[in-house]
Length: 372
Image (cartoon, rainbow, N blue to C red; front, side):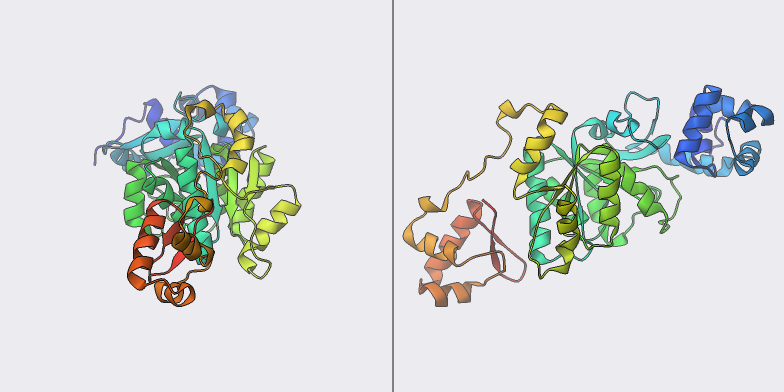
């Protein structure tokens, strides 16, 4: 492995990113001394005057150059980048939060970080309806010109990323570990697709493992990158609500999708609504709040229109089928028994209704009604 140039600005920045200090402390020290390089060349007295701890001062005397070598090797790989706080590529919204990261490791397109983003987050163990809603909201968001941002966790996060990609849009995943590994492992293919259709992002050095304490910290970046945060299913005590609270502290819009009072997974959403989050039924409710802030050209016609497809335009049999499909999955045999429509005719009509966007077929053969 090639040894890094220890006098280069990038090497000093990478070394600082491995220092035992918070992002807020690192930014304060760099600002006080003028540059990353100046931090390493400062006297102990000058460092002490910035408020640097004894642990940080000891690290600066003997930085982790071996770790910097690993980071430099990762950066030489195609598609990888480092976006420093002073870089033009650094997202403006993130720069405004109280404790922005000193730099971001990026796999994919750094330009995606400066696009207007909607964070979609929620439960790691969502219901079928929750998964479907996350995909639908993500798809509608990217069709409206937004980038969908989340944390690539199992559950709502993964569905949001997949929904954005499936609709031909861009998505950003903020990780709680270094980018030379994928966590969770089951999302290896999803991580590859996110990098191809947006970016994987982390403030942690490339070899940092997915430590438990990293995830609450990364949540402030998810909200900090975004113009708004949409919560789809969340328990009362969850990391999702930590992100929502970060959003409120950062002055971001918070949105929540309501649900059944019998579903414990939406109690966090209901709590947010009681605290002032906007109740959301479709992407139009989100766009009303963030379009002015984001200055998105609504006149482009890309934003989805409410009630664009009306059931009343359907013929008698199609409308009868649709009247018997709700938010809970139903199967073809149930619909045939209930409506007395011949199985061949029902199957053909269901296929047409799915193409029209009125219903969605699920794994296992069930059908659910899409929000219109």
